[in-house]
Length: 154
Length: 107
Image (tube, rainbow over all chains, first blue to last red; front, top):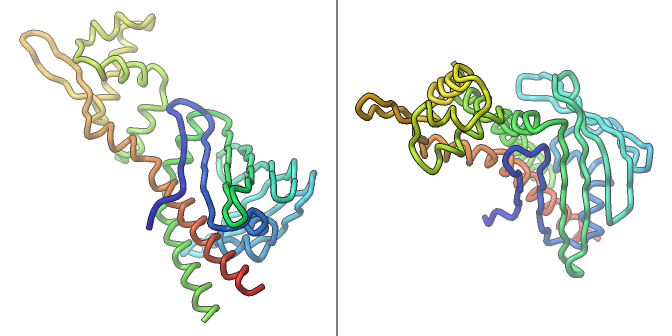
């Protein structure tokens, strides 16, 4: 499958940009971020709280294959339907400082859209450290989730 | 020893990144490298030791001089370090797309 997701992470900088074009109208793309039960499916996480509004907050929880529970949370600064979400993201019980995410949703045509995710970390060192984390494990979890979802749809 | 982690610790330091940039274009002796920095010579030596230790730099004996040059293979590995992260997001977004297409056709 063609890899549609691009990451722009300049050397020595404390931010990165993730871009992706979707074969979906922008309204549907945005909905995948808005509806808790859909977020749960594609992020592979449990959504404990998701308040889509300025000054709102969210809380996710993931269980790894060893049964350890990992919490994530953040505050929503801006929530403009079909356009933009500004939020913070924090990994609980880790030494990593929270980071800032700007998510911009763009209509390309009636059936296609683009997401630009600008992530700003506390330092360049922190960004690189997070990029090196064992994501292979996360990918395996994601694959298992896809399988589960597909089985349920059968 | 976690060599992979060491590589990233090595490039997290701005002086060491500057050394890698310097040596990228030509092989240089420790003295020639140190002359590019205001830092004390032993500090530069320490940086060279770390970069050599994690195989980003290689030493080459030429007469009485030791030259440092880039280990291109190791540098390539570092350049690819973002790939697992990209793949993780690509997988997530592929899943998002599949789920939302189903959602759309249900309507």
